[in-house]
Structure formats: structure tokens, C-alpha cells
Length: 555
Image (spheres, rainbow, N blue to C red):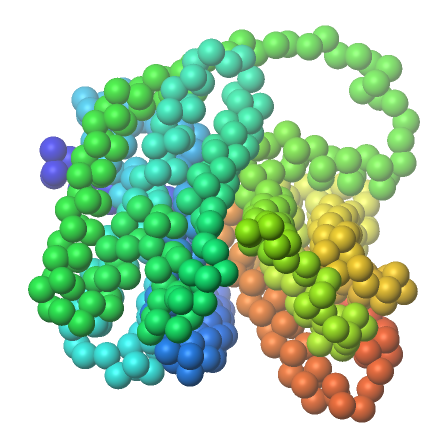
């Protein structure tokens, strides 16, 4: 069984990235461009790692100053658990059930448990690439700043390998259970979307329940006084989190080894149980997904089909329909941006507006200057953080696949088509701006004019990001893909909205620190809005002048 699982894991993993390999050209000039892109990706990774490193360095030093440095370990591990838990939902439902390789794998003499194990291994490999950034860098910096011994770094590697497995298994198990009902549905796409949303609700409910703290002010005071006492608040927030923390921090060598052993054994036992459940449930969902449902052939309503409409309405409507009618595109390009604000709202209300011993914590009282330049820029940084996960423009060309070549032949100017393709991203960024502003206004009660200026600046920021993202997709489109899942999960272009977003946040923070002493906050927000507008005009002018060159990759 082990050999079959390993071979199947390699096949599925290679199949997932075969388009990247086949896309390599033998042309020398294109190979040079490919090498330059690799170098660019390396620099992007270094920049992203640098941002995380700087943030980790500052936070660890602050915690060391109050003798609570172990709290950092708990925060990082909990962040990894929550991120992997949510991220795996989108990956698992597509890889386990909506991957085209199922049509070839299911008829083979392979046990369901072996298929589940192999596909889960691929999920784990994918998540490890994220853990390498979110976990390896911060925990390494922690070891350096706390002068940890070599044993810490060995333990760190064991924890980073073992700890993310259970979040992956929990999400995958929920997918297996829900998708076992696939055979009862008549609409695969609608069921996929409803199933994903249902699993997300369950995961959020579990996260909220595990993080529901009933710590009293007296207990909190005792934890602050006690060395590394605050970390006690997080131990029960997630299964095996306490073991992982103790495996990294215990002074006693015996206790440290024991906790690492318990972490590995617990993870192994849960993995075995997961495979046993997968053996029973997987075929129900996989076969049901392939063969269930009736295809309803609707009669063509000629009056509606050939109804006269404007070019803008028709083209933009087509873009929205591609997003809405395809659950994978909807879940991967739109939902993540909506989920992060919802998660933050839930955590904010749970942690800061909850009642503890009859004392309600009022957030508005924490903000003394409601027109502070730091507060305004902080809100813009929060908006930018949410916008980093909107991938509509970043996949606008790739979503069309090989059909993108028709853009060159239809009687519509290419620049106008780009505007139409960017429009859904602008709508989504505007929605996220308004959602964030409404949340801020409810919590902080800021002046309306100040919020209006921030909203305008945020909208300009979203428009600029929309046009830059489509340039990235035009320069390196992913037109050959075997499934819609590959457009997002196997598309390296999606790293650029995150990189550009973090760069924008960094620049805003630096400028704020520089000018905060001698400029009015209202004027500064207006300047930011004007700068975004000016940059958008420059970017759009660049696209208009280089349209033919930008469309060279589409053929």
C-alpha cells in the first residue's frame, strides 16, 4: 500500500504542475525571460519573507520586554492552524472531488483509502510551502532572539512538519462527510458552492468555540505577572497546540521530548482514523460527483437570447457570469477576500465587545484622536490587506483559457476589453472598501468627512491594483489548464497582488512616520487619493500604448 500511495502521490503532484513544465519553451529568448521571471519570483519571496521577518522581530522584542516571549510561539502556531484550516477547505474539495484525474484514477484497481491518502499528501505538500513562510521564518527569528539551543531548531522542524497535518485532516474530513451526499444533488456546481460555504460555517463555528475565552480580569493580571503566563490562554485553542508549544519551550529535556512524541503519535493516530473514514466515504462522493445529476436542457428563448443590449452590459455581464456560475472561480477569486473581514469582525466582537464580569469593553474609548493620521493610514492598510486576496483581475485573462485568443478577433478595441475585464475587480474592491468603512464607523464612530476621504482613497487604491493585476496576467497568462482549479492554485501570478499590497502598506507606513509631524491628516489622505489616481492614469496609459505587445502571449 505504501508504494502505491507514494507513486500515486507523485503522479497527482506532477499532474498538478504539468502545465508549468509544458509551458517551458525551447526558444532561447523566451528561456531568458523565464529565467528573469524566476529571479523576480525569488526577489518577491525574499521581500515577503523580509516583511514577515521585520514584523516578527518587532513583536518578539516587545514580548521579551514584558517577559512573555512564549506568547509569540502560540500566536504563530495558532495563525498557521487557522490559515491552513481555511485554505485546505478550498483545496480539498477541488483536489479530492473536482479534479479531472478522478476520471482516470477511479476505474483503476486502487483502494479508496490509497486515493485519499495520496491526494491528502498532495494537499500537505502544498500547505507546507505556506508554512515555510508563515512558520519557519518567524520561529527561526524567535530562536535567534532568545538564544535558543540547537535542540530548539530540531524541535521546530518536527513541529512545523507535524502540527499542520491535523488542520488539513479536519478540513478534509469535513469535505469527505459533506461530499458523500453529492449523489443526491442534481446541480453539481450549486452543490459545490453550498457544500463549501457550509464547511466554512462549521470551521468558523469550531474556531469561535475553541477561542471562546472566559478569563477574568484577575486571572489575566496573574498571567501577565507570571513569566510567560499569557501563553496559557492559547493552549486549548486548538488540538495539539499545547503539545507543540511545550515541545518548543520546555526547559526539561524529558518533557520536551515527551511532548514532541505525543504530538507525533496523536497526529499519526488521527491520520489513521482519517484514512479509515475516507475508505468508507470517498467513493460515495467521488462517484456521485461524476455521474449524479440530470442535465436539464432548457429551450432557447429567442426573445431573451437575441435581446439588444449595450456592449458594456454584455461584456461585463459575461465576466460576472463566468465568476458566479463557476464555483471554483467564485471560491478562489472572491470568497477569500470576504472571509477575512468576516473572521476579523467575529474575533473583534468576541474579544473586544464581549462582557466579562459585567464590564463591557468599549472600543471607542480606546481611540483618543478620531482624525489621527495614523488611524486613517491604519484603516487604508487594513483595506489594502483585504484587497490582496481579490484575484479577479489577476486571473481575468487566464480564466478564459485558450478562448482568450478571441479577444484579438472580436470587433472590440483591446483597451476597451481590458477596461471591461477589470470592472468586476473594481466592483469587488469598492465593496470591500465600503464593508471595511462601515465596520470601522460602527466600532469607532469617526467623523463622516474623514471616513469619506478614506473611502475615496481606498477606491482609488483598488482601481490601481485592478489595472496592475491584469498587466501581470497579460504578461504571463496561464492559458493551458486541465481544470479551473489550476487557474488559481497553480498560477504563480497570484503572489503579485500580495507582494504589491505589502509594498503599498510599507510605503504608506514609512510616509506616515515621515510626514506625521507637519501635515494635517485630512490633507495627507487627500494626497494619497490623488497619488493613486495619478498612478492609475499612468498605468492605464502604459497599457493603452503597449496593448499589442501585452497581448503577444495570447495566441
